[in-house]
Structures are given as structure tokens and as C-alpha cells.
Length: 188
Image 1 (cartoon, rainbow, N blue to C red):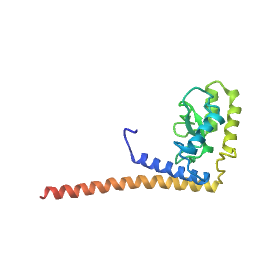
Image 2: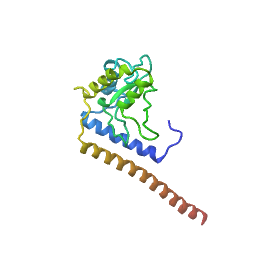
Image 3: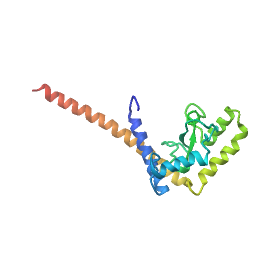
Image 4: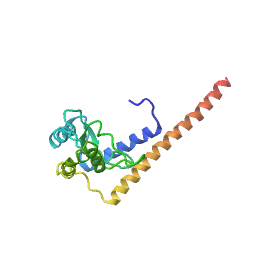
């Protein structure tokens, strides 16, 4: 649970909900990994496809988290979809960055992890396993055209801005109402 909530938190949640719905649209069903078929999909991806190992560093015997290969945010607009998730240990689930601002792609992150862990010889095998997962018939991630990618990005960016603006409007409305009611109370 967050200890401090902001308009950006609400806006980011709305974008993730949108990306979840779009992912489910392309999947043709719900992808709630907390229960049912979708939970079984996650377990199969984690345990059978990746052998209970982190997709990036190969660790096993550790708690594995769900990592979105194409990041699940308004900048990368990766969908919550079985073809976009892999198991990652807690360390590898923190995406490396190119500089202070821009995150690495999953391929750059994989290269960074393999280099950092002195496992350059493992890069090709891990890259191939991830690529095969993305393209698998069962979990195939949508192959978007540039126009489709841009459409999703525009909608996600607009949704983010709209939610932040609504939040600011709600604060302003509250302040105006508070002043109006405070004045009316003082006048009694």
C-alpha cells in the first residue's frame, strides 16, 4: 500500500487498466492472473516455459515475479497479456536504464543482466527462449503496426493527462466549496 498518493498514481492506474483491457481484447478473454485460467497461464509460463527460473539471470529457487517485457506504462504501452510476461527475480524485475531517465528494452536489460552476472554466453539462449515465448501460438503477443502502436500511445497519454486534470479540477472544486461553506457557517 502506498503511503502517499498523487494524481500521477491515479493516472498511472487508469493507464494500466486501459492496457489490461486492450490486452484482453486481443487475447479474447480476461487475463486476471489472480485466479482461474489466467492464473494457470502464469504458472505454466513461470514453471513450464521458463522452468521456474528467472528469464533474465536464470536463478531458480527464488520467488519469481511477473515482468512485462514491453513495459506496462504510458511510455512503452505494453499490454497485460500472456505473451508479454516472463518470470523475473526481484533484482531483475527492476529494469535497468540507459541514462537517468530512459529504461532499457527487455533485450537491452537481458544483455545488461548477462554482462553484469558474467553470463554473456547465456544471452542468446535466454533471448531465444523469450522470443519463442512471445511468438508462441498459445501466448502470441499482438504484432502491432506502427499506426496501431501510435494509436495506443496517444490514447494512453490522453487518458493519463485527463485523469491528472480531473484530479486538479476536483481539488479546485473542493477548495471553492470549502470557502463557500466556511463563509456561510461564519455568517450564522
